[in-house]
Length: 640
Image 1 (tube, rainbow, N blue to C red):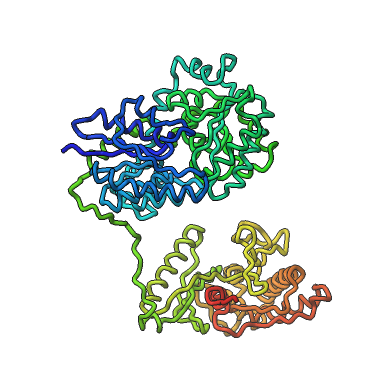
Image 2 (image 1 turned 90 degrees about the horizontal axis):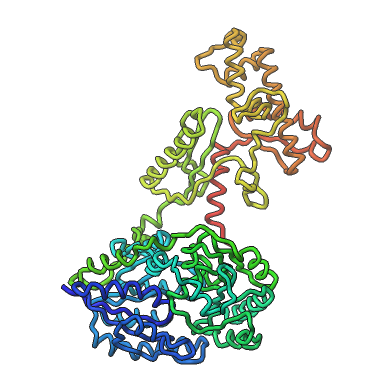
């Protein structure tokens, strides 16, 4: 069945993308009937009456709609949309197309998409999902929401459309249709004739500039200022320049005034024009020494030729670009723009195919052919799965707000579910594996197991806290790489025992449970650990060493003294760095270290720190509770 396809074009820029598709449709009369609707700035003399190039391409224009309200300000843009909405229903009703093809992000295109959607006409939107950085973004995304089908240019644009909940099966990654012509017409033999016809006989290949700057409708005053600075920079740069008039957006009138005030139209270096036919424009951009401005042509089409581009301001912020584009986002001085021209002018870059490989039209025609016009018209959105709201459910009201706490001990890894009242609801303990990867995998598994159990025991996990840190003004200090407070790896000796971190002489290498276990095992292997009345059950642990020391084992006492001194010296370093008001030791070894550490501090610390008290925590699992407290505090804190 032949499909009736209507292509609506609003201006010279969108026609360059739509024309290749229109030719393709026209060349397949057995599959498609083509209707062409022309509106917008195509029909305005000041913008070149560009509808004529459509007629020159031998297309029958079925309808010409004068939809532009002059004024070139924000109100005129809104009135133009309104005028288009008044005129379009009669045309669309008469043509009754199966599919309407709309391009891009212009306010005229928004009127087209709105009218078609309300009249139950299927819409294929070209170039959806892209990001530029002005009001065009909002208009483009609004059209995507109204459109039923999408032909996008880049992989990133496709992903954006999917993220916007558009149906993946109705999105075609086609590439940009204009690239089909760009890549085919890149090397035309008569290009110098075209260049000379626009810029004069004395111009040379790669020795002129193409300038095209449009208003930024969200900040007109600033964009007019940038336009003036660009013109000043071009005047100083003193190269032949083809400058195109800005588009019809709000602010263009002010920009034209700036151009005329500076005498650009009469200047011998400048050729100011309202329109250049696209095929000739291709050659002018392809062989330019540089392109400057903020047109999408600079960040898209120019990349196909490797033409150097200076992109000014924010109008194209977020667009994917090749390496040929030099951004001057804060174009606040003439010298900055001039310097950018110096850096770019005359260079050549590798050709970029970000926006297409030359086969877009072929893909789009195949996509059009595959559209089943008998399917229901209603759009379906692919929203991510969202859990039903349970804010009024009794289970939600009764659930216990909790945190997952993680303690990365030398001997064991421990994870706990800790409730808001500081009670450990459930605890998980596993031996600490030897390798980093194994530890991370085990922590993730333990946390996953705890999360599943939390659902069963009605605990709502607010976050995960990991033990060890410095707290200042109730905030955890992260450090530049989120690794602050590696206190166990403070070095207290240049030639101490090897540490698990790969260094030597760390506090952990002397005073941790693993360190004491290692020394205990050495003594036991030499048969120097066991005392009368002492029972040793394998494996040997730090507890055996402590027991032996308490029973008078001089070797065990010496090891504990050395460990206590190392810990004390490390704590003194901390005292001298952050000057806390209290030292609290926790863990199974805390009571053994309390008195010796207090003694080391009194002997070796500065006088300002000598009287700081060393206490032993009497909390159950203080490391886990401390980690959980950070999460529970952060997630429930209120600031007014």
